[in-house]
Amino acid sequence: MDWLGVYYYWAFAALLMIGFYAVIAKSNLIKKLIGLSMFQSAVFLLYITMGKIDDGTAPIYHEGVSQQIFSNPLPQVLILTAIVVGISTVALGLGIIVRIQEEYGSIEEHEILGIDER
View 1: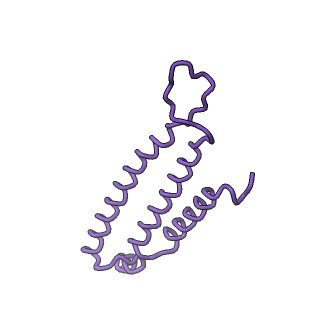
View 2: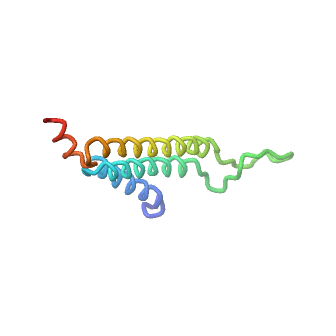
View 3: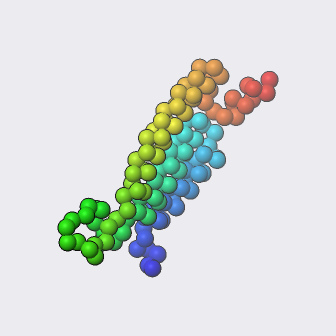
């Protein structure tokens, strides 16, 4: 297997690490939420690319076709559901961040923790 030929795995690893870095290292809650979204997108990319089979077609059976290679549609179906859950998670996170901004006057994690310690 050629390591440069599987570029989607490199894209997955890069997106995953960028998202993970943003969630762990950033103090701004909006940036953390964007990092979480990137992390989710990387996982979506991984599952979608794993479901693709070279020379595979859609799993539609025809009369007289017996030696056809079919792609598995299950990863794509599961990812569609995961995308909806991911969008809902981001929307809920934004709503919580708006409420935190109203309560504390900041969306910086260290400032919020400083206010809570008083």
